[in-house]
Image (cartoon, rainbow, N blue to C red; front, side, top):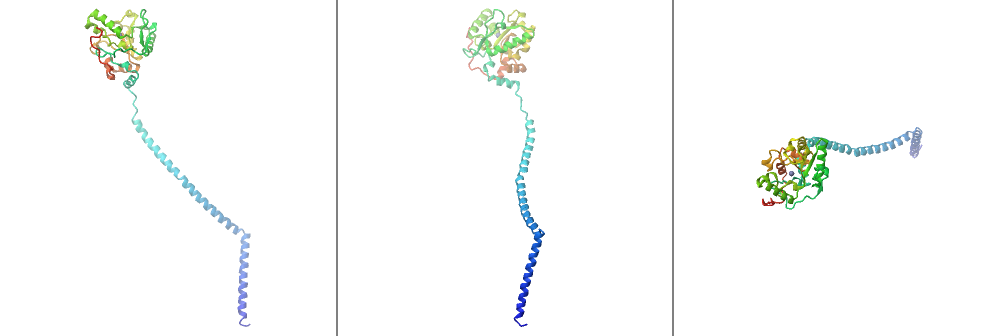
Length: 311
Ligand SMILES: [Zn+2]
């Protein structure tokens, strides 16, 4: 063997070895393919990728959901605050309007119902009620038909009379709206009969009568002969009237022993409509009507009339 033959042999050996290695690798691959190992690796790799993506999505979903509990917590917190604040609201109860407040609100509806009209405070010059109606005959004694009264007052007076009848009492009115001119004649009559000082005890100077409001009635009964008499206050009909008139919005302007305050002698027959709300408040006040009306502070728009008017 010469010196050039050796490298050639070595070269052949390398080639043979490489071929052997190559064939061996191919054989192993074939085996792997047959054993589906490679396929498993590929599937595993894919699944790993897919699962990895899924995990990321899951995390994203979780992150997306995460704010919800926060919001919920906020709501709960707000709810908790609300629950804490509710007792505070309850601790400050909404006050029911008092009887007096209810009366005050009602005076805005028709202020003239609660105007003070007495010996020193008169009605505005030429005042005439805006809604006078003629009373039905059954509300007046025979011979007193055609009496006029404020429409709202009439509705409540009819209810009062019906309630009295249900209680067994026949009450009627013989004197209702009285115009300024009628007051002139009436007061002049009493001055002529009794003298001025005594006339002022029993009759109003023109413009100073509550009857001019159209909301005042003088009530009487058969038991007192259908006249206007103090006796009414002592008979069952008058006692019932005194106890129940306020429920229909009427008040007794001139009570017994009230002359020092009202300026008028006792008149159990004289009742004035001021609305059910205010009549109820008056009843609870233990004040005379004039004192009660003064608390409502609704001054008349005109000054007092001079003493000489109507004389
Ligand atoms: Zn009267």
